[in-house]
Amino acid sequence: MPIDATRRRAGLLLAAGTAIAVLLAGCGSSHHPSTSPTTTPSAARTNSTPATPNAATPTTVDANQQYNPIPFNVGEVAGLPNGWSVEVAKVTRPFVAPGLPAPPTGQQYVGVNMKMVNLGLATVTVNAAKIFAIEDNANAQHAVVPVPGRPSGLDGDFVSGEIHTGQLVFAVPVGRQLRMLLDGPAIGTQRTVFQIDPPKTPPRD
Image 1 (tube, helix red, strand yellow):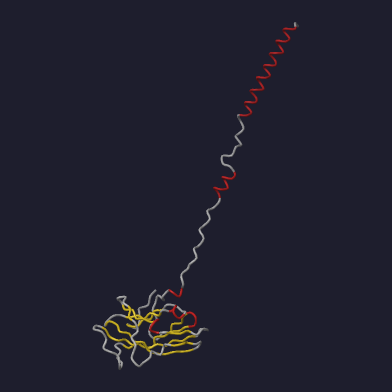
Image 2 (image 1 turned 60 degrees about the horizontal axis):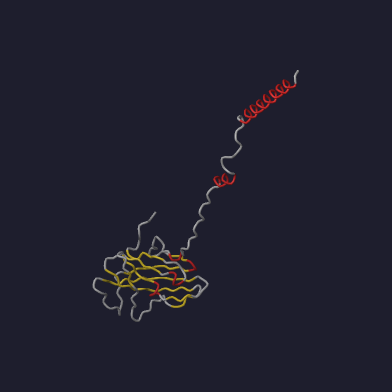
């Protein structure tokens, strides 16, 4: 066979082989899905991390500053924090006593007999006129009225285990319903409400 014919045949065979290789490579690549992730691993972790709930806000409310929601009735003993117990034993309305001037127009006196016990460890000085007040159903407050020549019996130092009994007098509007308020924190205990008149309150759910 002539040399030129041999070269032409070898060139044709080489070109055909190259074309077939290109076709096979193209077919192979078209049947494999992409391996690139649609999201990065860090993004996936971020999306799957649950939200952290807000931490509960600690309460700063002093329980002793909150009045009891249901007033104590006459004859009930109010057991209070730090060893105190306070009882309204009797209510007299209208109240009269020698030495008391006539009440202002439209008002009358009310007498509240009480018992206070300190079973706490500390000695506490009590000034009853500063820690007790009467509140009427119009939200007006009325202070203790001193009775000339007759101490209340509730003032002074309460050592541990000491019991004081006495009476407080207030000038109040005629016909108003009355509650007595104790400023408990002034003696190291809780603010407290006592029902004075009418002497009982309907039960609450």
